[in-house]
Length: 66
Image (tube, rainbow, N blue to C red; front, top):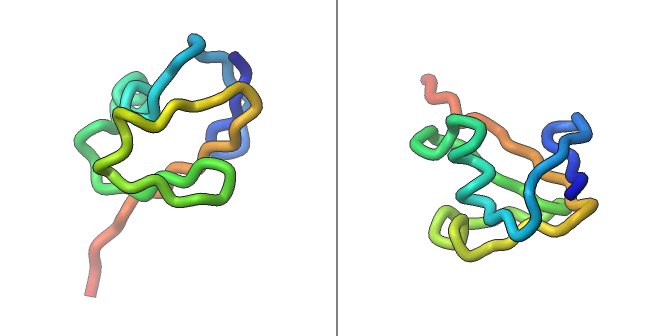
């Protein structure tokens, strides 16, 4: 299926969960925010939230500072 990840068109298998996407990108254990079609997906829903063809995914890394 075709989706857009951080502005880049990409091809992924059908029935992909948000958690599977993050694992495939090596980001599963990182502090980040995940937005799909302009809606934040909570970490507790990563494995149950299915990504659909045409979805726009934005992944933002959390950076600490002070």
